[in-house]
Amino acid sequence: MLNKLLTLVLVREPSRVLLGLKKKGFGEGKWNGFGGKVEPGETILEGAKRELLEESGVVSNSLEEIGLLKFEFVGDPQILEVHVFTSNTFEGEIKESDGSTRIFLHFAEMRPQWFYTDKIPLHQMWADDKYWFPMFLKGSKFKGYFLFEGHEKIVKYQLDEVEKLNS
Ligand SMILES: Nc1ncnc2c1[nH]c(=O)n2[C@H]1C[C@H](O)[C@@H](COP(=O)(O)OP(=O)(O)OP(=O)(O)O)O1
Image (tube, rainbow, N blue to C red; front, side, top):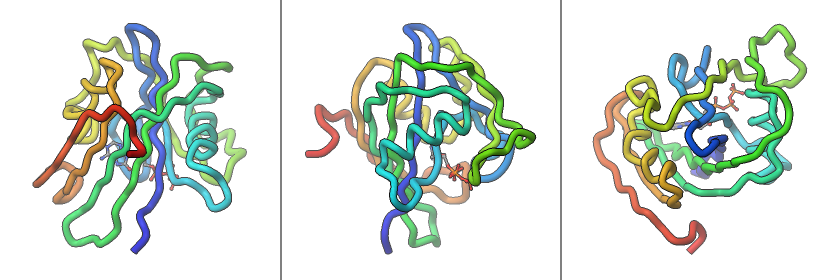
């Protein structure tokens, strides 16, 4: 089975990171970066840019790929392949996506909020984030694999800091 391609974008300033509270769907109730499925016909980078705009209202032309995370769930043969990007610049106004201004087919509903880097709400994020978020915050690149049982419990994982992602 082919991996399902997804993106995750973390916009950052020197001391803050922009996260969004997922208001419904997969990951509901969790803070996360902005992202989603890569659509047919678009590159992974294009997908990342589109999801960032749809979910936060901002455009970034300086996305840098910094991580590759693979997720598997016990009993499900599909692997989620999440390409993680960061950006320290953006244009536009940060907006909550609430569905009332639905102009895109895949309009995920997120409530954006800045968090200081020493106050990242890891207890209300995916369980894997506590392992790789510190690598992101210090500017490293990383590759990881996480096996979940349900949506909260990690039963196995491997995570490495890498110099380059495509080696
Ligand atoms: N375990 C884990 N940690 C951190 N981030 C994630 C995961 N699993 C994930 O799926 N993610 C990220 C990857 C994506 O950014 C989102 C999930 O995207 P999803 O809401 O499924 O995709 P959309 O295309 O926006 O979905 P629709 O709302 O259109 O159905 O979480």
